[in-house]
Length: 321
Ligand SMILES: [Zn+2]
Image (cartoon, rainbow, N blue to C red; front, side):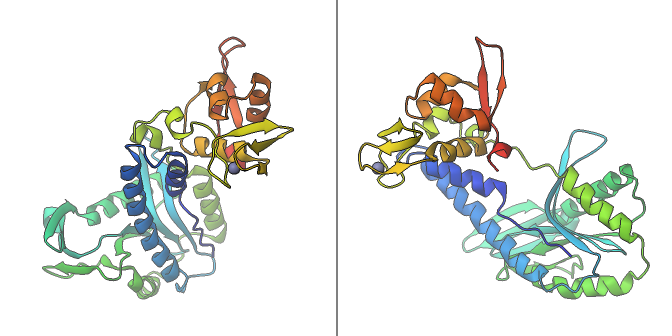
């Protein structure tokens, strides 16, 4: 059984943005508040990780988190928070990080959140989960895998959230109940529908077809690259007075010497999905370096377009590994 959880890309993107955006920038406060909100959501995901470690699954079963797949028939993507593949059935978990008290009214397709003095209404996640189950079933059929039993449930990751509903909703519960729920699903599904070979093939297929969102924070906050990375800064004294000297960076304020400052700065730029830019922009970002130095420093990390006169460069995240 494998259980792959790593820090999601969007949190890394926010961390890059907050590292590079000056604190006095008018958009810093909003970006910082948004980051706190997403980081809290990730905490809920971490609680779920703890629960998943307790599952008593078949030895061939595997778990995928945050799967994003492209529908074969149209250009839409659908996302599955939690997918458990067993030899006898598939389990989809729609994971919610709501807090406060929740009143579910699935017949109206709504959920109302009561938090202190405030109430807010959202679309009911039960429908969302069922839609994902249909999308996944269609996707699997298009990849040659047919007639699998699929269970789609909504999990609340925050153990202090209070659930209420007029009558019991069997496919909605706290994530901590997942081990018991899966045990009972296993008891009810004893007929094998996937061979060991098919399960191995499916795990590979998901790894291959998973598409991470290319979500540009520069677009979201309407920022230009120049605003987030005016030039590289000294990690010892935060000074921007760095000089490129003998293959490294010398800080003229505190005298410290570093080798790879430009790599960190360019990787942050790649995380933020900047577009193609002429060499001149990178020369300014990296503290007014020469054309030749800029070309040499950029070379391992960029793709290039255009002819000799109008050449443009784009930093690519995959090249930083
Ligand atoms: Zn310094």
